Length: 151
Image (cartoon, rainbow, N blue to C red; front, side, top):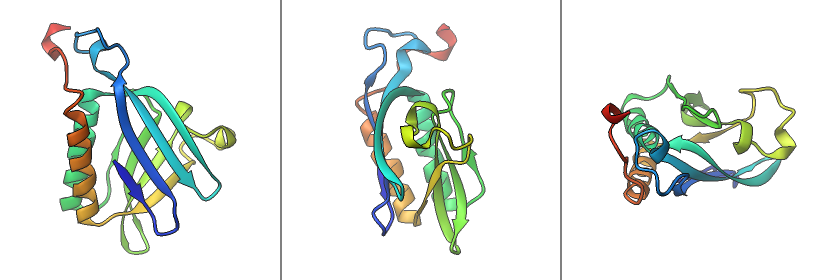
């Protein structure tokens, strides 16, 4: 999934594998290696870390779809706090605010206080639905493994 602004700032998220490829239980078997790259007005960076569970990625796609129909006012967080997303109003329109923490934050921004390093991306309803579709298509390679009842 990639979102970008008119000024060249962008955010890309890609699932590159399971953290534990041989594991099949619901918890350990569903950690995804997540590659993010972003361009901020102050610089560009790339990071890869096991920062989402497969079922959280599915929830994220659903959040984007719901946002496409509902507008602004919600935030989604995950077990690992590397990334979170919030819908905000910027210049009178809907935007996705991407928060970068811990391993997903560039080295040059480590001194900025928590929850204060983000990039806003204005998004249309079509952009949001396209991002959700891209996530779901990418997740086809990484289905949820095991069942919650098994743990």
